[in-house]
Amino acid sequence: MPSRVPDFTGDPSRDLLSARYLDHTGDLRSDALTGLNNAALTDAALNTFTAAMGACTQADFYGVAKIEEYAVVADKTDADAGDRSEVINNIVVLAKNAAGDSRRLFVPAPVPACLIEDSDDIDPASVVLGALFTAWLAILPAGFSITQARYTSRKQHNSATKI
Image 1 (tube, helix red, strand yellow):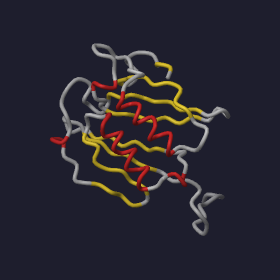
Image 2 (cartoon, rainbow, N blue to C red):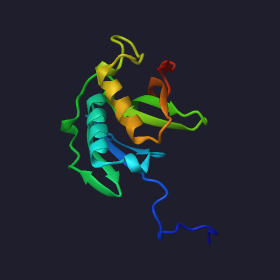
Image 3 (cartoon, rainbow, N blue to C red):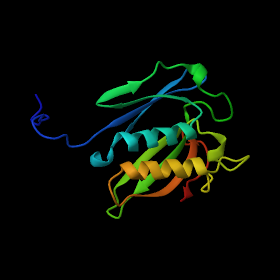
Image 4 (cartoon, rainbow, N blue to C red):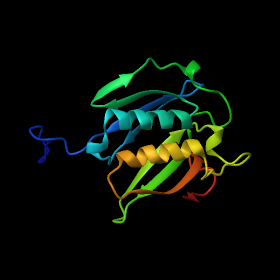
């Protein structure tokens, strides 16, 4: 029997978001986003974040869970087929604060506009990634900044791009 158990009598210690994706091959992926700023998780901020993530992924971004789930039925025909369109292909974004705390964000099946043309390098000037970075920073605790991002397919590709 564990010596420490959760106490449900007070406010939650953190909020957790879970994002769900389906690519054109039928592969599913779920990512947990932790270490967020609970006070910033307004409906407007979450709608901005999900819209920005939706613009950055070719996968069907069909669900987000935050205590209650808001989802549609997953449908692989809602995902785009193309280069890097499987959910195992990612952009991994790293944010850090002055204390050295870090948070990661995964962008599965990234749209071509996230990368420099004909390469596996992140485009730091990408409009869709810029919108996603801004939306993500808005729901992280104050003091975080994006430090790097890299494209990977299970770490088989390039090195990180400093942002």
